Length: 57
Image 1 (tube, rainbow, N blue to C red):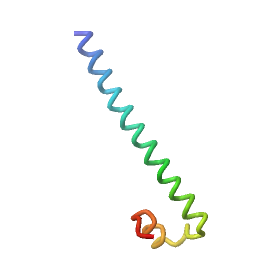
Image 2 (spheres, rainbow, N blue to C red):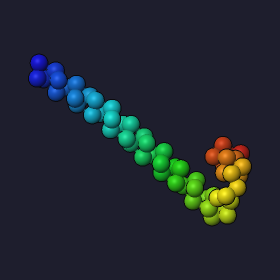
Image 3 (cartoon, helix red, strand yellow):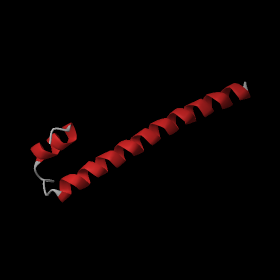
Image 4 (spheres, one colour):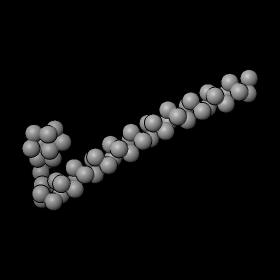
């Protein structure tokens, strides 16, 4: 029984780790786009921000 719960906790930890890694990646991508938008001086132009995020800029 203890082994079963240990394995369950390990699996849950693995899934949480994958989720955390994915969220860290998305945060990094968002920070990259934010930097580009700021360098372009368009950080207050929300239509331009949306177009950059959509890949249509």
